[in-house]
Length: 428
Ligand SMILES: Cc1cc2nc3c(=O)[nH]c(=O)nc-3n(C[C@H](O)[C@H](O)[C@H](O)COP(=O)(O)OP(=O)(O)OC[C@H]3O[C@@H](n4cnc5c(N)ncnc54)[C@H](O)[C@@H]3O)c2cc1C
Ligand SMILES: *[C@@H]1O[C@H](CO)[C@@H](O)[C@H](O)[C@H]1NC(C)=O
Ligand SMILES: *[C@@H]1O[C@H](CO)[C@@H](O)[C@H](O)[C@H]1NC(C)=O
Image (cartoon, rainbow, N blue to C red; front, side, top):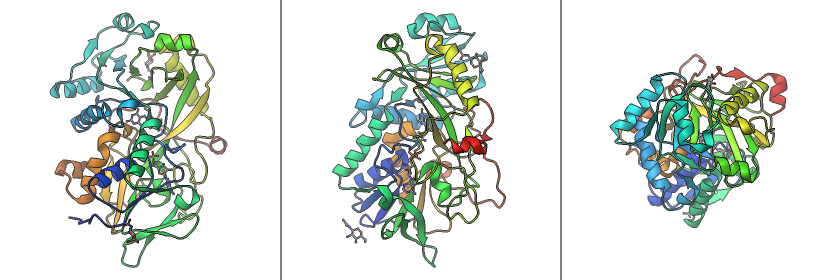
């Protein structure tokens, strides 16, 4: 078991959901010397944890995450989180009768005594949810009233502000941008080199760099960054009013999902698919190419959506809310998932670098756990996690051969992951 004393200098790299929640849990446990660095101050403008909305659902076919999400949702209603949580409910639909994914998810909910309402026809959904009165196609599904969504940007900022209040330091900009890990001759991490200024020293480094991680540490055998398209449409106040009472809704056959309008009347649509890869061979990775967002520029600045993604999102929108489906995007975004083969997170020490702890692998579903995630990660960090958590979130041993990582958690739909071509990558 790793013994970590409360006055050790701990450097958290990455101020997304993983880094922030871990830092908060450690601070609350009495760790006194924590510094967080990031490229930008949270909410990090192009971080995966930052958006106008993230789904907060306990609907999982894996009882482990369903339980964790139930715990998280209880906390979303309290403290610094509650102003950012909207309990709109979540509508899961499918074209397939007795869709195995939905059946399994319902079983898990039942086993946790969670209540939900089943729908056997589209007509019934249209009648019950006025904002979906134009819903197309034969669908069945269920509605979970306890799920909803959160303003991710607001929640990140709230956690960062709480950390500042508790005396945790933030360093951002070039001085807070890690260039590389510093590993001494005894394979012990001693800090990080940053893009500007002297190295930052620490006896423990928590690498919570999300989709960027493979840039700094070769974990390509078990994580890969995938860019996921998101579209935003500005609604008029009247249009927004008509959709205001909508739940978050997903078509599990296509994995297209959309949110009720945000407070400034923006409709957001995305799909839980396999996304896109890029091939980047820039700076100091010893000839490796990685699929990761750029380090030195704002990955959210471009509004570019690949044509196929654009079409897929539109097609989804036409079926759900045809009245606004032809409106041009106000903005598009490719947001990065950090994929693992099973969809399980990683919260574990590196096998061969002492003092280096990895906290990532959100696999497109990590944000909802913000209020509890750090507690579980801190348990892994302190060596006190349950056997189940340790097993689920362990860093697998390296494999010699590079394999394509295909997420296999049963929740993804749509076309297989593909590489963006050179022209497309130039638009990012
Ligand atoms: C389109 C999309 C939709 C999603 N929908 C949902 C949802 O509905 N519900 C849900 O629960 N989850 C959802 N997720 C997943 C969830 O957002 C992620 O699992 C979670 O936010 C990942 O957090 P993170 O801290 O690992 O990554 P990030 O938030 O990306 O944090 C990593 C940080 O590391 C920093 N960093 C990188 N390199 C360096 C460096 N060299 N030096 C310093 N800092 C560095 C980055 O700037 C970044 O801030 C979605 C994700 C996406 C992309
Ligand atoms: C944190 O640790 C560093 C390195 O050991 C030390 O120089 C510094 O004074 C410590 N800061 C606090 C607030 O304890
Ligand atoms: C659901 O997705 C399937 C598969 O893409 C599609 O054929 C169907 O039209 C979609 N229905 C709705 C309501 O989104």
